[in-house]
Length: 278
Image 1 (cartoon, rainbow, N blue to C red):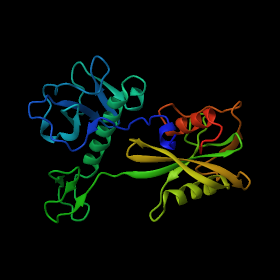
Image 2 (spheres, rainbow, N blue to C red):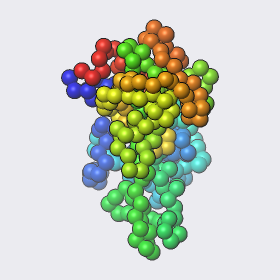
Image 3 (tube, rainbow, N blue to C red):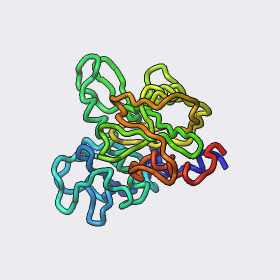
Image 4 (cartoon, rainbow, N blue to C red):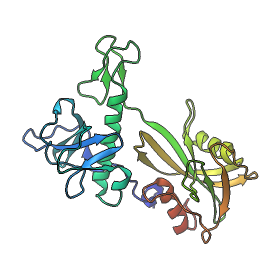
């Protein structure tokens, strides 16, 4: 079975949303209202609203695509309309279906992009949405900017059945996760994975194997997951990104990251399979 088919389904990843389709003109529109990292949900808990609440101006709507033939739009909203409830994106996990969660994540990312690109970075002119593309363009100098997508790697390093877990100073007390970090300019994903492991723990790796990816809308990352084998070195936390690192066997696991994360998926696959590379 191909590797990516054995990964757990990555949350926040749209499957049915058509990004650039031309939906029928008569199809009813759906809406996602965004305030920072929150979306406003209806009485049933869904972030996908069937109509735009009264009093909101749709002129700044951002097209998200079409879901089952119906166009969807995101809109920044600072005031909560009657009958709706603000919910953090993370809190929707397990409470709405996967596609709704993914669409909400896309909406949060694009509203964030809109708010951080109000002006051209070259000449300072107010930027506008580029017709036919998910991009902003400067009407004065013609500069075009696309939504930020920040690649990151996360690596499950194993030594036999043991896994190398790390603890960040930013984690809740007792929480451990896998080694992760952002890809630097000029790097491949493979180089970034080996570098992050070495920098944060002092360990070298071998037999790096791609396992899957996950959009991570906090605010705009794309996580690429890998398995790797321990090649050598003594575990030495860097004291900055990692304050503690330890090898853990399957029967002595620490407090793990949340179920919505690719870290959880990698760990669970390791626990299920004798050899993640097969």
